[in-house]
Image 1 (spheres, rainbow, N blue to C red):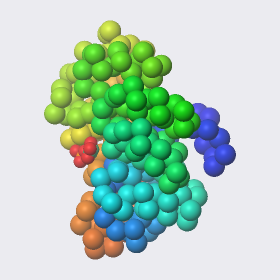
Image 2: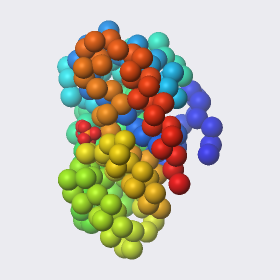
Image 3: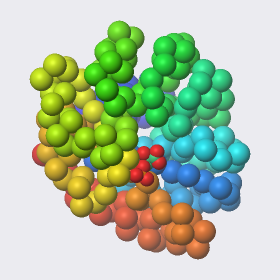
Image 4: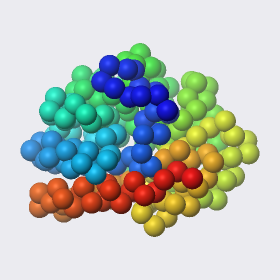
Length: 217
Ligand code: 3PG
């Protein structure tokens, strides 16, 4: 794999191949951002998806980008061109969206932000492919068909790679990661809300360490 450093432009593939799991993070307090990022780094996870679901999300991204340069922070829940622009301004180096629109695709391309767009149907995969995207998030993965759906897609969409996200756990991740068209999974389990609230950074480090045993087969 190409080395990722602070100056290289990232690709969506590099984002997916850095670790078996991309943590999906919801932060309500800016003060949690930096210790949380350091806790994940200590556990070996440096690709961090901070979702744009709270008023504090952009400030959290800024804090991580400024104070934890070894981490690679991206924005999740990107639903509009304006979201993509705000995320890039806050230091996001990649974007993840729950669905795909050409407006979001164009904005991310113009900003130089690699985009992992969410898809759940063949039509959505084809729309993303029309825009040249072949690394996609399958969302919501377990609710929308899980392993069986990914196996079905491997025929007509054999040139597409997926990051299943939604309902993924430490227990079902191995069967997803064993599929040839899955490069990584995404999940919120690495950063539980109660661990954040309690400042239990050691627990977040342990959860990150556990995921590194989930090597892509
Ligand atoms: C989300 O949108 O919150 C992600 O898909 C994570 O889902 P999860 O909480 O089921 O891991």
